[in-house]
Every structure is written in structure tokens, then in C-alpha cells.
Amino acid sequence: VVRRALSNRVNPLDNPITLFDSDNLKEIRCYLGNTAQINCLLQMGKNLISGDHDGTLRVWDLDQEASSAFARADCTLQFGCPIYSLLHLGGHYVVSFGHNCAIWDIEKGENVTKKIGSQFSLVSCDGANNTYGGKATISRKGERDFSLENLLEKISNIPKLQTVIPFNRDHLLAVYDKHESGFAEPMHAAIRVWNIHDGRMVSEQIVEKQSIASIIAADNKIIYGTTTGLMIKHVPQA
Image 1 (tube, rainbow, N blue to C red):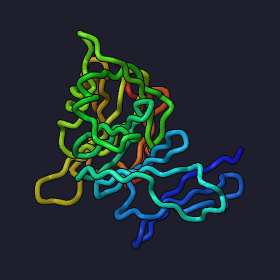
Image 2 (cartoon, one colour):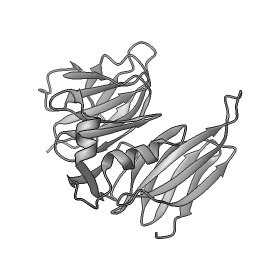
Image 3 (cartoon, one colour):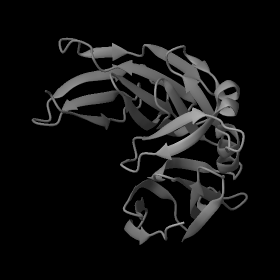
């Protein structure tokens, strides 16, 4: 079995995604056709999902023959605002997070936010996650369940949503950049933990006068990178 590592090699012309063999760092393939900076990646079986800064979601086939040095996207979906992170809901459903949230049916190539969001609830998250996306499990919404649509609305109702990843089985972690009006630099960043079953915000941490470039969560700790270095903080159990 060939183990592969994904790398986003920035190119001012086409922003390729480059696939490497992690054993020898040999370049296997470049995925071309991106029209903007790639903000996030998510692997779903044989597919790779990428989210761009121009609001484009692309689906790539990782199972192409090794002789194929370059590849184009199998499916391209337009959202209209930057996509900063992705969450796999199981099967062929993906949530994209940015200044707004959307649910996508990757198999059909369509936005199904209204249809799926009102009918399903998030029942668990996969705590083993990274900055390239996470996994969650959905089920048919019961009478007393909190709908996926309402949960996404709560999380994205705060301006400047940047990243959403699983924190543990029952919680999602979201990062927000808060900007002072008229200034490009963030005044501070906020890290909030949300309960997926009732939509409550259970904790908040403020990072003063910095933005967060990347973040992971493990064992009720968060590890994040800022302009000044790497930080590790404990988040109390909700």
C-alpha cells in the first residue's frame, strides 16, 4: 500500500494540489485548475475535496493511474464566498464553512442545505481530526433533536467564521477572527466550543491581537499556530 501525503504548493498561476509518496517524498501527481488560493482539503475515500478562497468546492479522484501526472477536477461547485474548512457528514455529504455554511451532496454535485439540514441532526463527531477536515455522523432528526440546520446557523451567525473542526464526540470547535472596523489586521481571534446536541456555546477563549493560522484538537487540548508561534491550551470539559 502506498502511503500518501497531501501538500498545497502555492503557485500564482494555477494553485496546484500536489500528491506525494510519504515514504520517499516523490511527487506522484498535480491536481490543476484551481482559480484561487486553496484554504482546506478533505479526503473522502477515493476522493479529495478542496475549498478555495473564491468559494469553489472541487472534487478530485485520488485513484487515477500512477502514470497520470496531472489531473483535473471531476466536479466543480460554486458557493460564492471563501471556504475555510470542510466537515464530512458520512456517505457523500460535506459541510463547507466560511462566512456562511452549506451542505453539499458530492455524488449529485448540488447544494442540499435546506433539504438535509432540516431533516437530520448531528449525533457524534470524530475527535481524531486535523486542519484538513474532520468527520461527523448524522441521523434522521427526532422530535426533540436539534436540527443540523439550526446548529450550522448558530455557529455561522457570528461574523468572520474561519475554521470548524471536531473537538470531541459531542462538540465542535470554531475559530472566528474579529476585525476592528476600517483595519485589515484582526483585533483578536475567538475560539468557541459548541455542543452539537443543543447548539449551546459551552466555552470561549480569546487570543488577543492575533489571528490563528491553523488549529487541531486532542484530549481536550487545543494546539494552534499564530503570528508569534505555537500555543497549547486546555479546554475544560462541558
